[in-house]
Length: 209
Ligand SMILES: [Mg+2]
Image 1: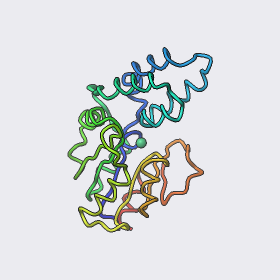
Image 2: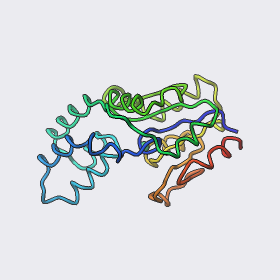
Image 3: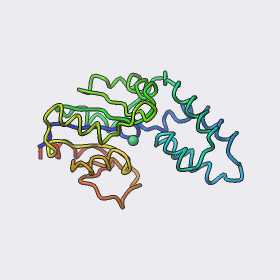
Image 4: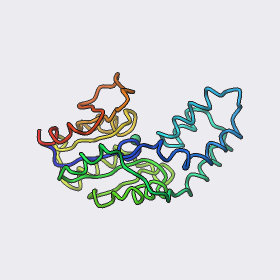
């Protein structure tokens, strides 16, 4: 029996690729200007990672120059998404589960909050937390622990739902929380999780235990 769902946002509630061109256009242009076109494999891989993971992490992993890092950060920390956004159809199955829900997402505060607004999902959550590495050293793991402590949720009463084994899934595993990996394209079949699915149809049953 679960009393609370903790959800990731990007690629868990809506597909990032639906807003990528619009959102990442300026950033990709900057990257193309700064990185060596000879390294096109690396450039493409970095761009792909950027649609799914925080800029700071990708910039470090791919060795972006200090200049590119600073310019990209400046660009992204001021972006807000202002177009209509649509959640995955599958999200309806989570929305209809009538227990406490929290949204915990990593990224730039302004941008993440603008996405929540454009998706029209604020009312679905008891709490919304943006983990913004620019503003704080607080991690998803810290936020999960805080949510449990503040609301007296026992570890076994929590289910963390997300698409990223290195982010919310790892944070949950570290805390002993059950995980549900949303993996519609079988990208992470090698990862050990409590539950997995290509949609959210099974979550209602997991919640009832
Ligand atoms: Mg995600």
